[in-house]
Image 1: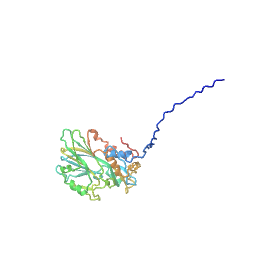
Image 2: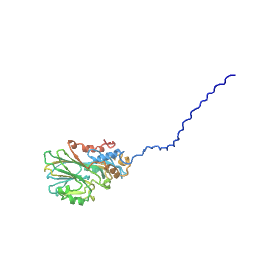
Image 3: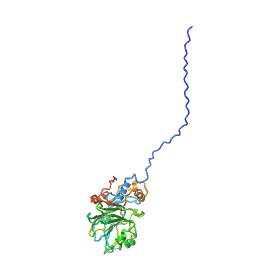
Length: 340
């Protein structure tokens, strides 16, 4: 009989048992937040506005566009003067009013009878072109032209809050250098061999500074060196915070170079077509930011602004093209200046 075939039985080893792991909770996929950040950091125009506030001589302005639904235009008023002191003290008050952009007086014991003013160098064409204006930025630079070996003086500077015309005249008309230097908002800086001068920048005070005003009519008058209320106009106060510079302790006969600038957003109503320029078509802060008001834009950049007073040193601070560069936005309106 044939032999039976061998049968090989393969026995598989049992698989090791695994403990069943509990199911992992499903993780939610993180969604990328693509919402636009509220604020002004993503807006080049808001950064430009901040740089113009911080250094108005070197940076051009931008249109705000808030609270107005008619076209606006940009302009800048400026002054350049050299004064020679007739006493150890010289008081300079700078404001955005085109007629009295710079009001000044000199006196050792008091300023009574020594007041004078300098209008903006371009006050006439600006008044012929525009009716209402608001300040975007502004500042004043003061350079005492004093030899390093001469007796140094003190420069006190600060931003004077808006006040009534009667209060303004009552304090400054017969004020003394000592009384002015004791104003609480002034800071003192010594004129040294390394200090060429100072630059003081304007800041808004309250909501009124974000509104349009008639800045081309006088609110004070000066007759025979005396301050008095303007005979025309109905301005109840100084219209704006004022930049105050007080020089004390300088030798008599010191030459002081002063330049000031205010950047303005303007509207027109009754000016004729012969004097009105075409409105700006570039974007405004209101167009480019998500902030609802001009005040909100200022609050968003205020914490990053430097001190209002900057000590200038070296010949570079006497840049003769400072005003020209700051006004460059008015000569080529469709270009956008971007911050460094």
